Length: 356
Image 1 (spheres, helix red, strand yellow):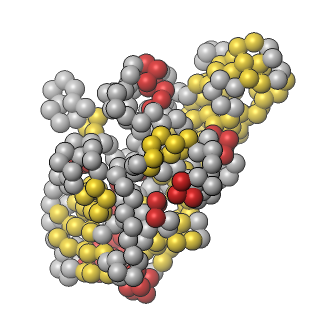
Image 2 (cartoon, helix red, strand yellow; image 1 turned 60 degrees about the horizontal axis):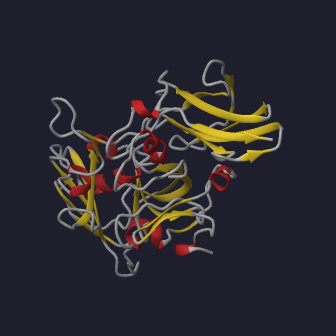
Image 3 (cartoon, rainbow, N blue to C red; image 1 turned 135 degrees about the vertical axis):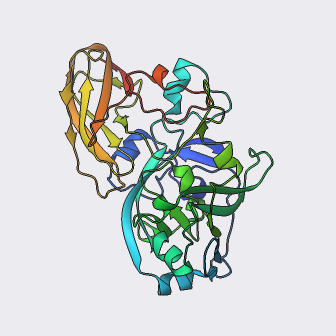
């Protein structure tokens, strides 16, 4: 077993902070990702919080500020479960580095996402109990982990708009895949915001604050933004996920025997949408065939897909693309979405194979 109880074959991008993704074949095996296979994205050292002493403070623009223990959350609020896919904003960044370097950023492959069954209380119920004020337009989440990459170093804090915070699918989760949250995944409590970048699903949650403006913390105001361009002085804050798709097996660069090859992958539509279709091509995009697409395990979950291709001997290239329930598709080339931070790559994925 590897660090933090993870598989020995995880692709470890960093040990402190711990950042790792599963190999594609491991991720492809199940609709719900085992906890030892679930990707890990951290900005600083993992806090060690004693569940008995931990408290959640709900404050800001509320009529009744709250201080809640885990027992309070479990006893005062209805528990619910949801199968949700969380995705790092840098997922598939490695494809962008082929276009141009992305200095200083982790070269995530297609495994910077995973799916789990989370259990917890609805954030909306907690905010209703606190009496969120009408003028509160945003809800901020704060945790005690401090990142050396922040300027200046500071506890992690981000926010989501009020309407997203009050949606019934946003959870304050204390369990993952039928067991208490592991430390590396946010114990004793984390936020789960389906369909948004994983950076908004804050781990080791200690404060929920209702406020008028978005969080001005480093990870909201500076990081997790598309850089400024043209007449935009601030860039675009990343939030809802774009439609995405990836090939998990076979892996890029694999050498395969001639004959039928099963190709598997995932597609994820983001908030409020589902994947309608996935197609693959072996001739550079001139002709496409439709892949078999699984139904999602929940409104915030990925959809796995598979197809069988008969590839002739020699070098081969497999492309994939998806459409979602709104009719949106994916850009063809990573060059179309390249940005200096390597965020939000949702271009067609490509794997290169050698068939013998």
